[in-house]
Amino acid sequence: MAHTAPHHKKISTLHMLVIGLSLAMTIGAWLYSKHQVDKQIEARFIASRDRTVDLIVDRMSRYEDALWSGVAHARSLSGELNARDWHTFSETLHIEEKYPGVNGIGFIHYVERADLPAYNEARSSEGRPIQIYPEHDLEYLLPITYIEPEAANAAAIGLDVAHETNRRTGLLASRDSGSARITGPIVLVQDSGNTPGFLFYTPLYAGEMPTTVAERRERFLGVVYAPFVVRKLVEGLLSKDLRDVRFSLSDGEAVIYDEHGPDEPLYDVDPMFTDTVEVNMYGRKWTVNLRTNLAFRAQNSSAQPSLILAGGLVIEILVISLLVMLSRSTKQAHSLARDLTAELRAKTKHLEKANAEIEQFVYVASHDLKTPARGIGFLVDVIEEELEDVLKSAQNRGELQMQLDMIRDRVARMNDLTKGIMEFSRVGHYGSEGEPRLPVSNLIEDCVADFEVDPKQVHLDSDVSEIACDSHNFRRVLENLIGNAFKYHPHPRAAKVEVAIKDRGDRLTVSVKDDGNGIAPEFHDKIFDVFQTLRKGTEPESTGIGLAIVKKAIQRHGFDITVTSSEGHGAEFSFCWPKDRSQSSMDLENVA
View 1: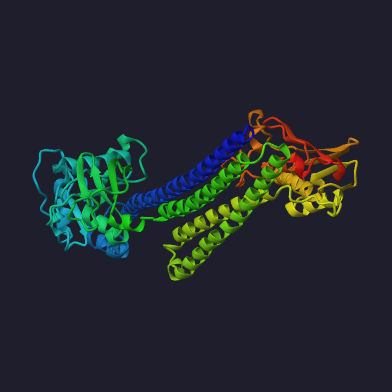
View 2: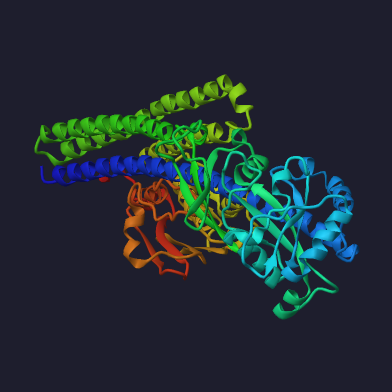
């Protein structure tokens, strides 16, 4: 009675640990998958946002290049432009084909009031007198002299842009800075729809390019300009049908273009993502407000996290079912022990029998659990085959394949867990008198080959040439310790492992020392518990059973294992092993 209660408590704690670990892994995988999916969707929005903003900036840069080519044309004529020259230049640009969204390209003269008669005479000599309008009191005029295509922009010819603040301010800013500038929001006289627009200016000076504001004002001849209706500009950038984001443009407080109205196709009342980007646009600050639409939502709805959660819960149910069966078996074993006679030998035999039944049950149950795990893996293959056509789609392949691979990973994890449980349950079922002796050098060579490392990375210092007692479990112990040394080393190809086997007369002392990251002292005892792992996020997966198997195999012979280590200074595992079977404590009558 005194020996059964603690054992029952230990089993209960183990059950809770397995359930908690499995549930934590399922929830962790679900949260990680959800986080990754959210990051991928956000990355797609950021890419669409940047592509849209870059397209606006790039297209305006192309318009600027066209305007500067007009300045270069005017400079080649020393500023002496005429209508025919401007028409010929405009035709070479192929505005409608190469610059969609622009209404035209024209020239605005800078005319002092005293020079107005000469300006009018020059226009009359061209056979196209111009009526300048509207009247104002400024000492200079800024009439639109040429604009192509002229038919579509006839209403703008003769317009004196000096009469209106936005038009005038943008032009004078271009003159004084010597660079391209745009106006604030205006309504073009040639726009029958009265929608927001703006003018784009590049300055022309007499002679060489001036370097000071005073020189620029003194030698200023006028500007090459382009009128824009914002609606047409956006339509020339990128069709709505080719975008999965909608945006609005604001110049200061004025909204000059807006796609966010509920009457817009694919309008999303609650967009998945929104963002605001400010762009310095040729002397003005444009604010681009972007939102995703229903097309974006439809393309980025993923069931991957839900599938992972469902798969994890299925495995969780299997694990709980196994542990319930284990718990019932354990209770049956303790019930049997309580009913045994008071004689110690009888109790020992019955407890031994019960333990053997438990181990056999764990082995069989773990073995049988592989069947549903394999079935899940088979179903994943069937699903993948059924979705072959879908997986061929470049749009769906990445997400679906990731979902299927995540389920396979969970199945592999379940297989590793059941395999570890099976190995743990079978420790102690070897070591018969007829078991062959194990050459130590062969064991080291096998480890080097199995772990695919350089032979120089494992150094052996042994007083004995072979292991005579329980060679099977000795191999298992050494392979686990050496394997862990390489598996958890930050640089496996540079790892060094030293194996020392010393003859102490009645026993062998064995040590396995590595130069890895080491183990903090507070974890020295915990690492030998079943399902206990110190794995960090970047390290390989572990079932947490390997060191428990090592400890159990050693304790079967009446010895124990210790670890000497600290973080950053490697680890050394030390234990004793019988020289031959006569010195082993692995006697069934002494093992309870």
